[in-house]
Image 1 (spheres, helix red, strand yellow):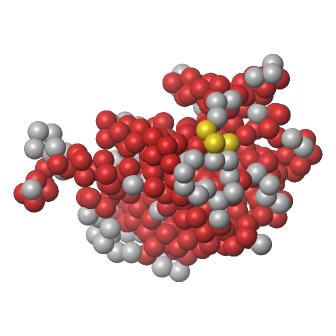
Image 2 (cartoon, helix red, strand yellow):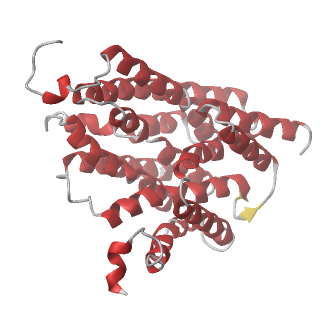
Image 3 (cartoon, rainbow over the protein chains, first blue to last red):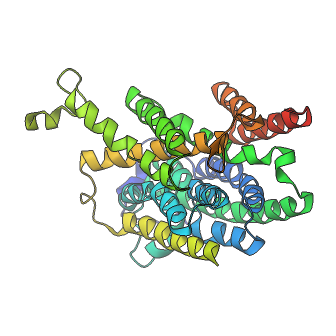
Length: 248
Length: 102
């Protein structure tokens, strides 16, 4: 494991000991992996069968998309609209992959296998490491523990939900929105993000009674380009987006 | 069967975007506007989903015990509680309000 490599990153100043990277990665992997329980319960409570619930965690493995899909299906959305909402939530993983592909410099043959682990948490841990070796260890340990625990706790959650029957009586229908809120909160750092969130809430709730299930969320996604466009128009005063000012 | 179709489409789509990120040469998706949009889309979707799953009952808007639970989760978030505690707060408060007939 300690052989000399040509990789200059390995010897970089401020390198963390491998054990520290593993400890950080395990912390994230275990904490988030355990919340597969909430997904299992929510999914079973939404009427999905045990194999369906487990297939989602095994094959989709990106929490927000999974919660979105079962939420939309439970609300009576048609399968393709439900899948579209879940898919759009997963699109951010492509941008994580871009960052990771440079950072980890994985052999091409390994990439199709590593791809399934490209999610918020593995990216966060990998990006936090000062060296390529640390990033690779962080990515692998976080990915492995999170994948194993997420799938195990999904199974337990789904079995538990079937055993206790009416999940609503136990307040478990509040787990889904609470998870979304916890994922959303750290993203609301600037007024742009807050404006997008506020407009999306208005669109999502306002259109709910008048459009078919699943569609209001997709329309609410347009809050992102709308706010970007509105801010671009006002970019003369603020610095943000001033590069596109010439078009006006 | 419909559910399996939704699962299949979601699984293929979500895996494809993950792989795409790893395979695409850097620079192709590095335009500032594209990056900005990719960062803001999850914000919009998560906000809309949070609101709907808190206040929607089918196609009707309702105010029930879930709102109290999600409010408790928000308080936990402001207090910087860990992820699992945030979710637990929502579940416990929702169950509590329902038990009291809310």
